[in-house]
Each structure stands twice: as C-alpha cells, then as structure tokens.
Length: 310
Image 1 (cartoon, helix red, strand yellow):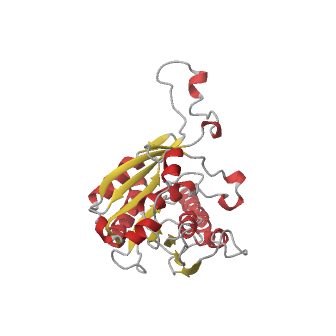
Image 2 (tube, one colour):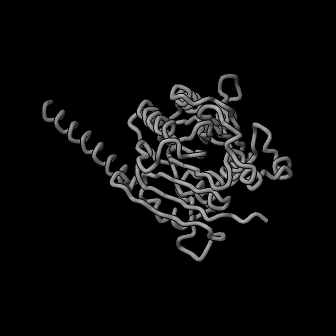
Image 3 (cartoon, one colour):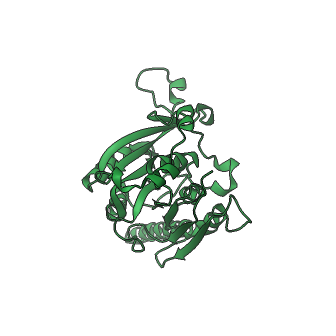
C-alpha cells in the first residue's frame, strides 16, 4: 500500500478576488462551486444585480489565471439560477468569462441528482392545473461541472514515481462510470447533515473524482469558494495539499469541524492545517440582514418625505 505523505492545508477567510497569499502558477487544480446568484437557499440579495455577480466571477477567474499552473485544470460546479420566475444563464456566462480570460474550454460533465429527492414543485406542477401547451416548466435535477484548462499540459514533467503513486483505480473508474459526461451522484441534503445546514454544499464524491482525475499526489488543490471545506477535506484524504478561500467568517467553525480540528480524527491525520483570517472576511448573513434593514429604512424615509411634500 502506498504511504500517503504529509500534506499542508491553508484555509483563508477573505475575498478570493485577491489571492495574495498564492504565488503565480502555484496551483495544480481548482475544484469549486461559486455561490448561486442570489438564490434564496444560499445568500439571497448578496449581489446588487446579475451583472454585479458576473463581474465578481470575472475578477476571481482573472486571479485564477494568475495562480493556476500551465496546463492545469479548473473545475466549476454551477447551475443556471431561477429567481422570482426569471432564469439566469449562469453556465453559459461563466463559460464565456473563462474563455475570455484565457482558459481553454475542455469539457462539461452533467451531475444528475436522484429523481426521488425532487418533489413536484409549483413550477412543474403548473401543467397539472393547466394541461395545455406552453404551461410546461421542468424541475431541475442536474448541475453542470465546467472543466477549463490553462494552456497545454506537459506530461513529461511528472516523474514515473509520482505517476505510479497517483494511479487511478481502473476498476473504480469503470464501475462508477466516471468515463461518461453524466455522473449520477446523490446531493447533500441539509436536513440530513447538520454540518451542511444552510449551505449549498456539494457531495464529497465530486471533488474525490476530480482530484483523482486531474491532479497528482503531493500537488496543491485550490477552492476559491471554500464553503464548509469539502474540497479541502477530500484533498487531505487523497494526499494532496490544499488552499481554500471563503469570505464568510460564519463558516469558520464548520470548516474546523470538517477538517477534524474539533475531534480526535475524521480520518487519519497526515496533514497540518493553518487558518488565516483576513480583514476582508465578513459574517455574511449578519452583513446581508443589516444591508436589507438599511434598504428598508431608506425606502421608509423616502415614503415619509413624499407624504410631507404632498
């Protein structure tokens, strides 16, 4: 059995627009799931507009272009978002942004969630009330894994020893059908997982496959939208180093727990963890609540002034 070397994990609470802690070309793989645009289950009203959301995604993509090594891979788990009956083409727009920032569009995998976890919603149920053409709105049981590459990869740079240590289990690859552009994986359900409550987390199986398929043992995996630390945990399990960025300071204790810092061990600890809290980290939900209160107060005051004028 291959001995897993000790790994190092730097978990930074701060904005991924500026990954000043990372040197140019120091990252070998990115696995991440950006926040959904103003989704009610994630961070509603986080962005002023969809254009503001895309601007944020572009700034992070630009920084990833700097830190990702030549020929290496960026994997983004994302989906189009439905807000107040309007659908936003997130997958198409992120693809455009990453291509414009210099990445090669390599592939797309569709993550399919079990149908049994989705009940008939008000959206798809419209046709039950009105069984006529033009009333059809389907329920979504998929997300997209976009795969980009930062130029051409030089396979000769990897030693034969590292290749052997990182060898993919072909039996696992075939049995679980990694070779398809559709992956059937059960999603994380907040009501069944206390750690993931209130977080749109992805299942460990997704970073597990991507880290195995696109990185070598001892390399460094980055998640610029760390969330609860799923990518970092899996990287540690697979003998990779990791870096995570997360602006929401309220997730700090959850990340510590997931990385096994609050109990004896979630898995064998052949790794060190450093947590850095920068000045630009926020308690995001508290920040958003205060923001909404201020907006309501401004509207209320404007109405009062209008009444006085009348």
